[in-house]
Image (tube, rainbow, N blue to C red):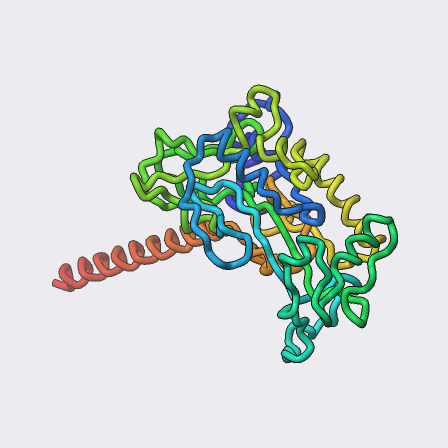
Length: 349
């Protein structure tokens, strides 16, 4: 306990969040998620497994008309969200740093208007001038390198897919601002909401730097990923990680996951993917490191993640300290005024 005296418990280094939350020295090691987006195929098995295990209701099944991403984002009824990011950036060597600022030439964009997809599916010859897709598929099946899809040997787009989730921050502002104690730190270092205690005040919603927490319209209570707290208690891994067919979502002790992720980044750099980088794995970042962190292939903003998140309660101790100084100064001034008035009334006789 003496180690926490004088520290700002709302920010900075926090090696043992479960211990500082009151769990004894024998609590289990902190666990979390490492999501390797380089092997995510966007199957959404994690979303389905999460809903099934946690009995999360459906959330509209709306067709957005924007790519294949109909979940749209995390909410009280979507504790997992697989983002589909379609980019004009080609596969292969990295694009120039100023590529995003260059004007787009419409004439250089690929033209698929002549492609008859039904004829291709039936195995019929493609129209004149259309890409020879069946030939490419045959080459691939025969083990031969497929022909370049464009004259310069570069594909015209790429897909980035990532399964987003609550980050189970080391410094969780949602937990700090909860007035009822509905949010608490588990012995595994995760952050869980007790729905039977939540009063629907919604303070935690703007406190989250990632915009993860959402309220249900019926009663205003908040819901989010629990990292399958009930499964952890039974020695099982979370449902989403269990269902992931490519092991894009990996579960385990956080220290081990960080080592595994660093090795994966080195592997990708050696394979010619220099943009591969970790997000949320640094214990020195603005939230003290995330319990659920990611390997990304582009800037965080591309995936809808804040580039430099900071726990929103970080400055509360300094603010209360300044408020205390102001109150003390005010009281000192009033005391001086009353003292001066008393001296004036007595006066010389």
